[in-house]
Length: 183
Ligand code: IMP
Image (tube, rainbow, N blue to C red; front, side, top):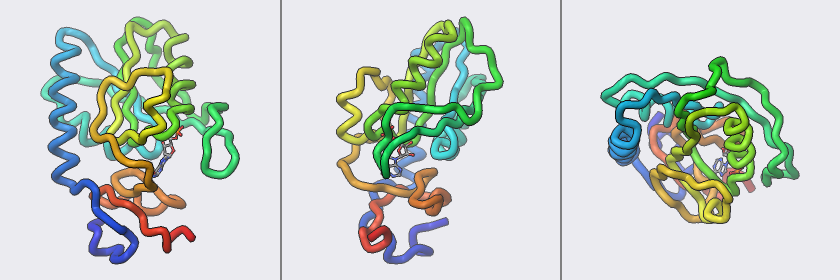
């Protein structure tokens, strides 16, 4: 879906479909260079990372495998607490493997910190993180994020997998949601 079909719901388009494709291609080149000669498992976090995973994975000129996790974070309102429950676990045994977590956006990073600790306890060869978007609070995270598409301001964004109330995930671009939509 293009932004014209939700006329007025976005205050601003931050990244077009083309911007995102170009940036993911650059990230894929970086990842490819870093993992040369090693097997690589991409782990996507449902549901937001679906679009990033689909396009990142297809930007590689090498074999990668994909697996998925779904987690739910307990919290009050819109803030995550870091207390996490696994709704769907990996199908793959990751011991001895190089794992790259693929994310759409990192806000506080609480859920992700938990996920990294959980995956590291399974004795993988390595665990790194790749995210399309990162908000300022994530810089206080104890876990390093190796690959970042764009650092964005502290605003609520939708599109390209990111939702508000499960809508806008199928928007091709990423944009800032108009406050009138959620107030
Ligand atoms: P964290 O644990 O605070 O990093 O929460 C990250 C999760 O919150 C993401 O995977 C998204 O599901 C959601 N989230 C955070 N910021 C936004 C946003 O601007 N738009 C849509 N979802 C967001």
